Every structure is written in structure tokens, then in C-alpha cells.
Length: 325
Ligand code: PEP
Ligand code: MG
Image (cartoon, rainbow, N blue to C red):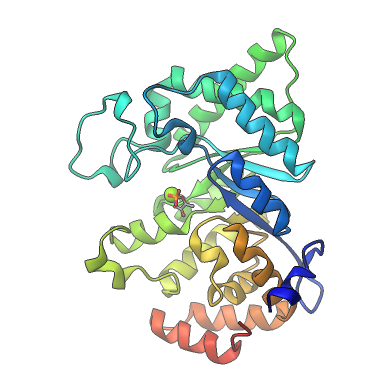
């Protein structure tokens, strides 16, 4: 298997009936780029920048961030790189920010909520991203967006920083796509409205499942509720993809579900455009997709959407698309 997969390293990702999708990789630091390239990823679909901020005593400078982002976009050599702005909070703490303890950190002051408030810190990151955009195909993504106003505020800050940089004569790309993570149910439900203003969606199923099922993703005792194949989750995913396509935008997924062998036929059938996963999953996923027909996947997805339980969906997919692993 490993040998067969290795042959696909320079191939595009295509279903048996010729439908193209993009397989991208999730990274945490620029050091992960070697694995991204050796596994034949067609882009970076999620760069989790919070790791730049963690395990240290103070905020990273604009220069440090610029160097990290520049390396990633340069290494990808024109292929797309989606960089997510700081997603701190929840399970990821930054002791030096001195934030008050919260009763429900996953529902609290985190990610873009915190960035919009601490806007000096946010603008530093945005400037580093804008400067790095001159070196490749950089896209900017805001995490944990719950309302359209949050997106508009974040985008306005980005535009302000961009105008300032350009006024100073700094090189900034003029076609940076700006998108959002869809990981809060309100945003999935309102995807049709968001789709008119964002350039793309990336579905964060790790959090979307947690918030939809009201089940803490870190809590073993409720892990039985962590159900990627639950028709409720599939229906939300469909809403997001359909809303994007209706406005001519693309929809990706960067949660664990995107690299899941059982989920892949359903996601292909629902029309997902980009799948972002750990680098080591890229070649197995490319091989799996090469053996699927988009038409058949569409029919299967349609059936799954109307099933009753997560277990029903899983059994149905395993029977319809037997594993090749
Ligand atoms: C997600 O929520 O699905 C996601 C990709 O982000 P993270 O796992 O970093 O919360
Ligand atoms: Mg998340």
C-alpha cells in the first residue's frame, strides 16, 4: 500500500469519473513543511498559528511572525496556504496574557473574540500576514466566527492595516482571499448570508461537532456524542457547502473529519472542494478518492442525510464503499 500511495505524490486528486478536489495539509509550525511536501499535499489548508504564541513568556514580534508565514508560503511555491489567525483559549492557554479563569473556557473569551478586543496584538499578526502575502498564495482565515459583525470587524482591521502598509510602500498582495472557519452552529445555519461576504469557508468539525452536540471534545465520558456521521452534522455541512457554491465560493474542511476514511465518500458526495488533514493522510485519501465515483458518492450522501442515526450512516458507508486500507 505504502508503495502504491507513494506513486501518487505528484498527481492531482481526482475521482474515478474525473471530479477534481484539493487535498491540503494541516500544520502547526513551519517545521511541518517537509512532511507537507513529501506527502504531496496540494496546499496548506490550515496553519494553526497559535503554536507561535505558546511555550514562551511574551508575544511573538511582527518580524518573527513574518518570517514564519513567509517560509510557509514560499515553501508552497504558489500553491494555496490558508493561515488561521490566533485561536487561543479553550484548551490552549497563554499564561502571559493574564486572562481571568473562566467557568466554560470553550464557550468563553477566545480566538477572534479575544483578538477583536486585544486589537494591538491582532493587528501585529495581521501586518505580518499581509507582508508575507507578497511571497506566495496566502489566504487569511478567522477562527470561531459566530456572527457577521465579528467577520466584518476583523476584515475592517485587516483592510486598515493593509492600507497603512501600502501607504508606507510595503509590498502586499492584492488578491488575498479572506475566509472564515465554520465551527459554530450559528454560522453554519447562516452560511448563505456569510457566503455573500467571505471568500471561502473551512469547516472546523472538531469544534462544530462539539458545539452542535453540546459535548466537550476533551471529555471521555461524553465522547459517545462525538458523532461526525450524525445526520445533524451532515446536514450542517451540506448547508455550508451549498451556500458557498451558490455564491461561487469554495468550501473546505480542516477538522479531523476531512481525513476520515468513512467520511470522505460522503464529503465528496456533498461537494466539498478542499479537504485539509494531517500530511500523512493525504496519499491514502488521494488513493481512496481515485477509486470513488462522484455520482455514486452524491447518491450515498443524499441517503445518509435522511438516515436516523450516526451508526446507521457509518454502517451504510462501510457497506457501500468497502475499505481499501
Ligand atoms: C476545528 O475546530 O475543527 C479545527 C480545525 O480547529 P481546532 O482543532 O484547532 O480547534
Ligand atoms: Mg476549532
